[in-house]
Length: 173
Image (tube, rainbow, N blue to C red; front, side, top):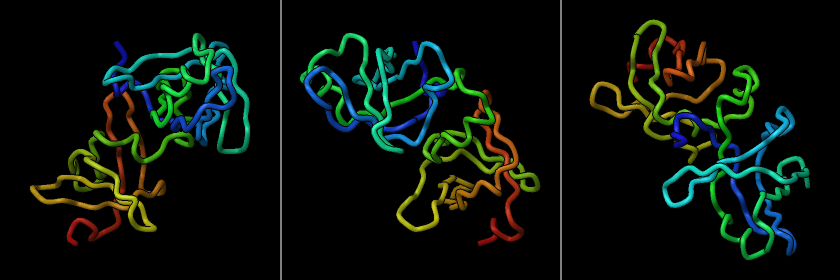
């Protein structure tokens, strides 16, 4: 069984394209170019299910058309509309992975500051403002940390830990 910590979100399906089972994927990842037998994973009623690609092509820089094996009609493709699409972590090089992940992929990771130590787990990502914020339960209160790549020093995907170097005084706010 595929576990949620073994995958990362690469985008979302929108609507079928044509009548032969193609479906549009909105994504900014190019992970399929790095593997000979690409597949994606979808949450189907609470279970992460793999689907192998028969074919794929780029429509624009942020959209792709995917043809999944066994999905041969517009009606079958419609079953995937508005579903999040995931990709296995173990098929991507860790350095390349960072460019393909969104901050939502770090929900559940433990944040560890180089000076303050363990801060807590990321419970949510707030994208309601221009600056994206990571929500962490820290010492019984909600801590909002800026989601900035320059603060991240290291990521341990196996242990689901995000090591950061926070600016002086940020924890005192």
